[in-house]
Length: 202
Image (cartoon, rainbow, N blue to C red; front, side, top):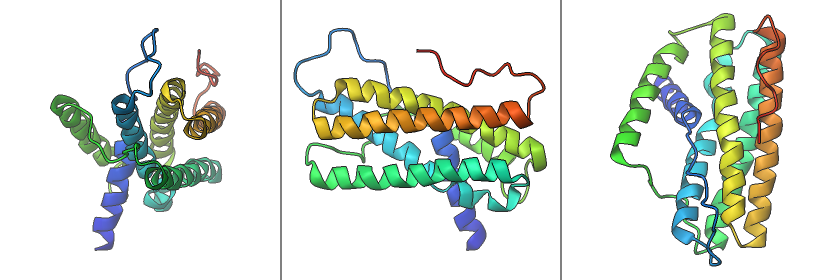
C-alpha cells in the first residue's frame, strides 16, 4: 500500500511537470469575463499545483544534496498553499470551476505517454539516482515553473475580478522567483558554464 501511494504521489508530480499552459490571449480581449476560457485555465493550474505539492514527499528518499531538497520543498510548499487557495476560490466564487478537463484526447494521451516515460526515470525504487536524478528533476521542475509563470500572467490579463486577479499576479511572481531559484541551483551544481538563463524573457 505504501509503494502504491508513493507511485501515486510521483504520478501526480510528473503530471504537474508535464504542464503545458494555456493558449496566449488574443490582442483584443473581450470586455466581459471570459468564464469558459478562465475555468479551463484555473483547472489546468489546479491540476499542476496539486501535483507539485507532493514533490518533496515523493522523492524524499532519493535526494542526496540538501540544496536540491530545500528548493524542491519550497516549490512543494507554495504549490500546497496555492492548491488550498484555488479550492477556497472555488467555494467562494460560484462562477469558478477548477475541476474541468479541457485538454483534447490527443493531448491527454501524449501527456500520459510522457508521464509513463518519466516515471521510469524518476521512480523512487528504480530509475535514476544521485546527481543524475536531481538534475533531471530540477530541469523538469524549472520547465514547469516557467510555464506556470506565464500561465498565471495570461490568466491575470483575462481575469476581471480584482480579488482573483490579485491571486494570479501573486502566483506569477511566486513562480518566477522559484524558477530563478531552481535555475541558479542548476547553474551552481550541475552545469560547468552559466549558460542556462535564470530570468525568462518577456
